[in-house]
Image 1 (cartoon, rainbow, N blue to C red):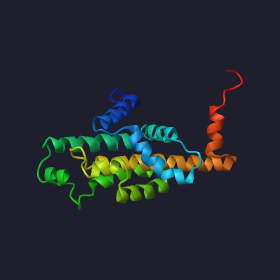
Image 2 (spheres, one colour):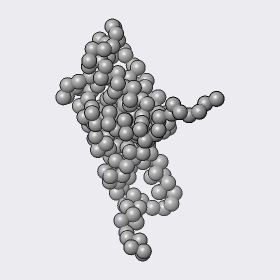
Image 3 (tube, rainbow, N blue to C red):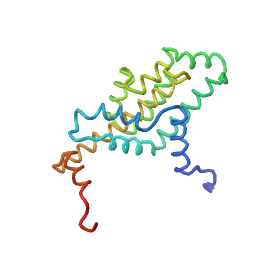
Image 4 (cartoon, rainbow, N blue to C red):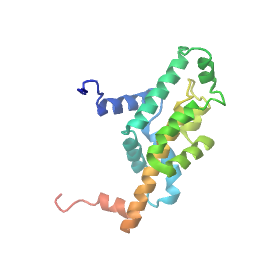
Length: 189
């Protein structure tokens, strides 16, 4: 019988995920800027804080958390020279035929549907923002997994916003109107 004693609480995993990203020099705003760039052409009135919120919500999903924790751990082990050969050399050099990094990141993207999948493909190819910095190794370090994982998070957050826009469209309001309603004080205040 399963007693549940070995379950790691969601808050612990969420905190560990965010700490791992920060430790690797990635902020939620870095990811949100990518989301904003991907979605602003389609969303009049979209603001960066909505993109940050979308990133926050995506980072609560276990699929994304697990992928991020595994990928960052492998990048850090490679930096320390702790992977066995030939994997050590493959990860450090981010060998072109090594697709495990994309596979882990893509697996997490499936949670958010086809919009996230196509956005991931675009980001993997075009390397926007912090993804490019990590891929080109600006600032040192091994980021074989991290660049793809950031593309995964940004893709999922962009997909969330695309679906939210559809909900607003069906309600007959725009992001500008939704934001104006959000900023109005309630009559009880």
